[in-house]
Image (tube, rainbow, N blue to C red):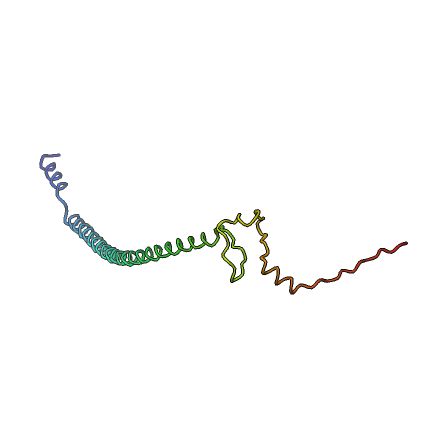
Length: 151
C-alpha cells in the first residue's frame, strides 16, 4: 500500500458521505422536533398546573372564611353549653327542703334544728293545718273481725 492510498483511505474515513450527512441531518431534525414537542407538552402542563393552583387558592380562601364562621359558631355554642352546665348544676344541687306551710303562716325558722329532732330524708312533718283539714274529711272504716271456726 502506498502513501497515497493511505492518505485517500484516511481522508475518506474522516469525512462523511452525502448519504451519511443527510441521515445525520435528518436524525438531528427529528431530535429537534421531539424536543419541541416536549417543550410544548411541558408548557401545556405548566398552564394546567397554574390553573389548578389558582382554583385551589380560591378553595382555600373559601375554606378559610367558612372556618372563621365555624369558629364563631363554636364559641357561641361553648358559651351556651357553659350556661346550660351552670343551670344544670343549680337545678341538681342539694338544698334545704322547705317545710310545708300555710299561705298565711309565718316563715320557717332559720335553723332546721330549732323545731325538733332531725328527720330522715323523705319524711316530712305534717303541718297542723293539713292535719286539721285531714281530720275533717277522714272517715273511719270499720274492720270486720274474723272469727275462727272451732272444729
